[in-house]
Image 1 (cartoon, rainbow, N blue to C red):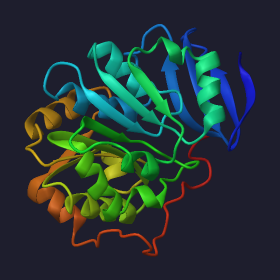
Image 2: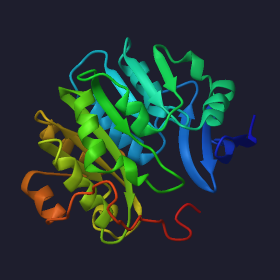
Image 3: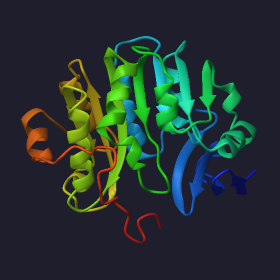
Image 4: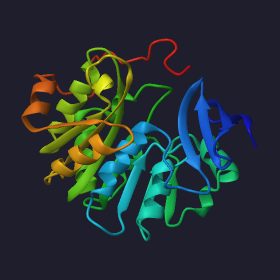
Length: 273
């Protein structure tokens, strides 16, 4: 089972976790892409995924209609299925070979009420019905960078169309010194959603090191107090910015639009060991 496997867009490595016999990592070009524990889908190894789960756990109780743009090993869909039984979920993943690998090796078929669409994010989102989702998770990467076409105002408007009024958008963005891309993404999200929050490790938030930041957004009020408390009290010890503090963080950064030139943040050598 461990080894290097061909997929539609290159090759990936499937690596076992020496500390957890049922834990598996998918890595591409030396960059860890996804971690799953086949026996315990509530175990989340990556810190940024733990922060996403903090937000999901604070949503209204009960099953969710969720869309995940970016699939890989489907860590969060497994988590949602385990913690919110009855949830209906769609995973969008353009790499059909990767989807087949996860089906064959990582028990994807065992996740109830999960549909996978082998499409790019914009095409798949355009095909979704209005007001059909409680949660959209945007965790799509090409290597260690977020596809720019999934970070623009045009795409965020389409995501807002798919989400119900009280629905929540979660975005995983990677950035480094200066956080210029994260600021522009937040400005972009703010054009489609009236309420935003940013969660990240304090070192990443200060631009001291390259890492992941989580953007949460909704047209309805977000549970800011709960996010602040749980982020600070969790294993990650993250900060949560919102309101005036987040406005100062964005500091007038311009939104991203289709066709805009943008510097894509790239991790420095050695970040991923």
